Image (tube, rainbow, N blue to C red; front, side, top):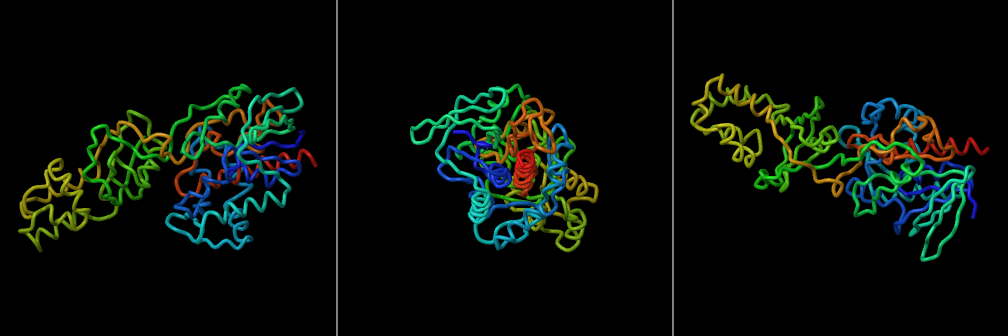
Length: 394
């Protein structure tokens, strides 16, 4: 069987590419259904983009690489597509857009776009024996025990990274890159909870509080969640993408409240109340009980001078912690690293040294922040590869 374009991976990026690559497209996936990570994302409602998307929200060794695709297929383009399909959506915090009903609406929309383009979807299908004869890619597809030899002018690798292996994630993209001598930036988990080997926060599991979390000169201001194994919540997930093993993090537990002034006021209005009682009015009571010895939160509020109250607030604003690790790919939402962007055209996503070979989406060393940015990268990079292929074969 000869086809124009073979796409590996029927996820967000792969389906987007299939809808835009022109005729003669076959898209395969080893899963039973297309778009499974879309379906489970955002609590089943898919945080499909962010209205504030700019290249600044993406991590890569080449911070300029994502600019071209993001500029040519923007969040507004995808919002218009969603609106064309009359999918109701709403904005949550920090520009995050979610479906009103279900993430399945986005999957159905992409399937419809693929159908309009004439793309053929093959599920429960694996690939092996990938090679290139100087003109075409040659591979063997296996489906229901039946092998089919296929040749393709173009090969788009949209198999993602290693995150969420229970959804079938593998390192196939990196294996294919290595086969064609394409450099790979060492992958590691991103947007992932951080762990502590001593289970020090086990008693606080379930407690959440606003925070600023800083690591390696990068700060995120969102909720922090204590877990049985360590720390999670949006602020930690964001910071984890900038954290590497051995790094400390600094947690500011009082990011917005003017706690010092409130404590001084309470010293006048409620002098006989315990300091911990007053502080529990502004921070979770379980958290105050947990840190009272570490931060010496003892005695009545009247017992503490201005200098002491200032010192307490300074400690709460700069709580240094040393995670032992992360929860790894099992719970990581994304994979950092991937195919080195130096090997790719930022306009087409094509490998410079291997005409017809493309890497898109999470397989590439471009990783977005939490909040819909990684889906936007999938749409933009998939569109860019598809447009390049369609233009080349007009």
